[in-house]
Length: 138
Image 1 (cartoon, rainbow, N blue to C red):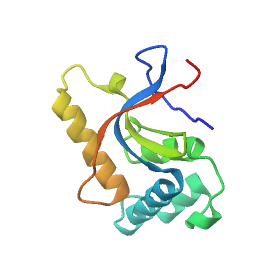
Image 2: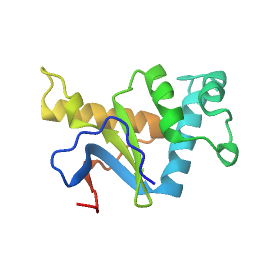
Image 3: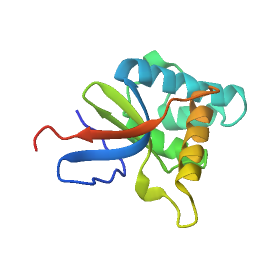
């Protein structure tokens, strides 16, 4: 299954391109969900906001679709430029290069992306890279 939100393809054989990180789907989804729970603990979002978006605060009860649930939450966190995709058993999360602002340098683009991902995952360091997912049908 492939879920895409706002990704730009640079060639006919690329499904998406982003600057960010990826992990095994199950591990990545659990980490992402737990990171969002930490946003409740530190007061960034309320438990009610999480329930409004995800329907639960327990990962094992979450049976929704990330592409439906995550964008409204990211909008509430003022980081709706972050995109998420699931492809080939991996969760990809990051920023589409088309969201770079006219007055933003490449370093600022990367730094802002990394800061948001650290905030979402509630960690001090993230390992980000340019990610390309190739469509195997081309």
